[in-house]
Length: 175
Image 1 (spheres, rainbow, N blue to C red):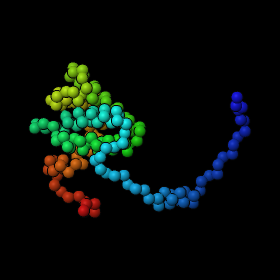
Image 2 (cartoon, one colour):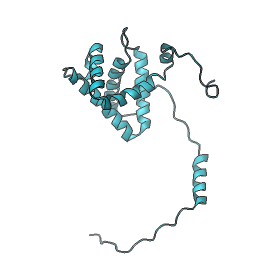
Image 3 (tube, rainbow, N blue to C red):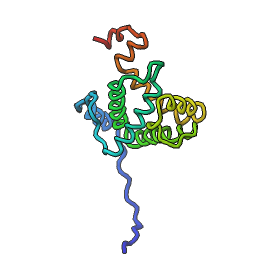
Image 4 (tube, rainbow, N blue to C red):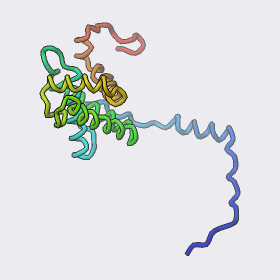
């Protein structure tokens, strides 16, 4: 058995401003390689990646569809890949809550239109109807999921052209 210690350990010395300056300089001068901004696969567990990707694709196809149908499959693939990178970089807590939101939307929205099947098994018209009802009934669940998808989707150059945005970047930022 361990004995309880009753003595009090002394407090560590207080950090001075000079010590903080040195610590900040060390971190400021450290050079780290930037993370690549490519559309290749983000490392994750296969089952986790498959389910989250399937949910995201089903939601994105419905959210970004038009009268002519769903967006091109290449754009949805790009979105799913970028979303996987985004969630990976967001950390375990934020990424986990986002994936939970994807799952909730994917399984709860079809129930609102009385279809007991996952969202990706519904037709595009049924998905649109289910997500419209979900947005009205449970906005606190659906809007965060939709917002992140929109941020990533509209980063694509084709989406900018489709919305009519033709202006160049800010002069100090662009090429």
